[in-house]
Image (cartoon, rainbow, N blue to C red; front, side):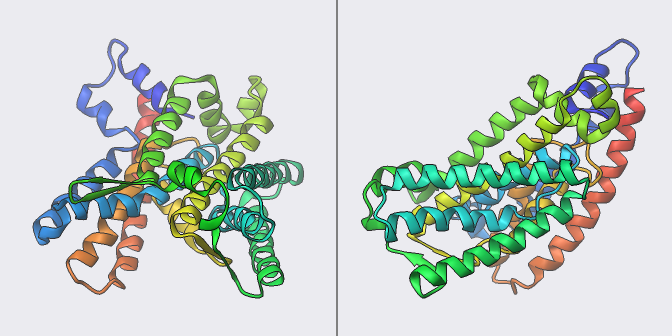
Length: 348
């Protein structure tokens, strides 16, 4: 069980390894190198990649993925998975959309209800994992299926279709849209509000993970749950809060997408949960828990955005992106395992 802060503290003690060696064992170093390589590669192969519009495009692409990847990385460091994270973005947007468009609610009131819905589902996921002892993979897969069925069934029942649209005419849309979906023009670049949300959440999550007692609890319950419980770490509370964190991130992404595009499909977000996990793994998280980096997860999302849009700018077949994901995932797992083993030796 080793946190990034513990590694740094240990490495500064007398007789510890050199600075280059300490840098190598950082969880996010692989993602940083990968991001640098992808950036240089597409900067050389296509002129559009470094244009103001190009930069804003791949940052926009990475932002919503990055918001989710950061929350998922904390959960994975805590030793759990959430396969309902993708569909949660649609569920929360649908709750907001149905209440505003079909029940006449103010957008802010609907956002409050959808937030409570998200937090309740996240808490239920955590409670079920702890109460039943089942792997979180199974519990959240069941939640994924249940939410997907509710999304499709309720939306079709209320609207006669699988889409909710028309939120722009709802009261409170302008102010809520400014918070979640505003676009700022900076010359030829267009900065989306989701990018600012991504940066803010990454910074806050990094502080939480490395500078607070709760952050130490996350690494403890993910690295050695039995030992953590014996030392008085509130394991149940920690894991439930982490599940609520991924649900909260899903609410932010769902709200941003709904208010930006003024519509939501009932099947939106399905399949994206694996991209969130891949971004976290690329960022340094181990599938076994107890090791990882919030900043690395944000870099993993940035790699996604740069690669996906770089392929478009280069006018290559977008099917190659899936090959890129597969290779990147395998390489990340191998690198992260090696880094974690070296970090453990350094701690000793």
